[in-house]
Image (cartoon, rainbow, N blue to C red; front, side, top):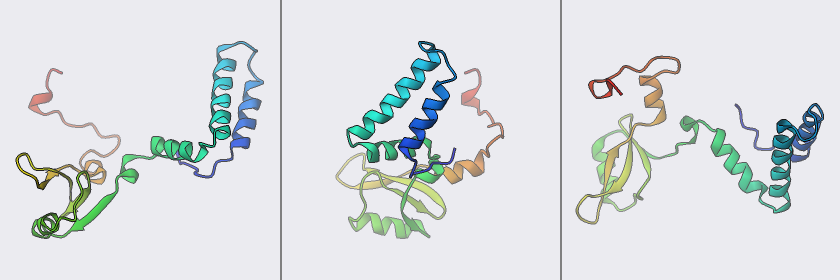
Length: 142
């Protein structure tokens, strides 16, 4: 589903009203549509519509579009120099020589280190949509 960040709340409420007219009052469909409409109205009245838009966007945005890579490095050496410079922040995602990593705390000590954490595009290449993932020895029988 493509996200429309500028959806018109009144248009959505009108559509919900039109759809709701097709169901008898008191039916489960009537109740569900009323709950959805009132929830949207509540969000708007509480002036939380922008928060809802962001929540809605994050809910429907595929991970491949949602992950932000903070830095890209051609080599591991460049990445390690950046890490040592103190500019890195825990949790940041980086790309090193085409592979994804996350910045995490050192196991012992005060510094940060890289943890291999494939980026969505890497996973898409390895497991294209519609293909069956191969099962490894650890996955058998589960």
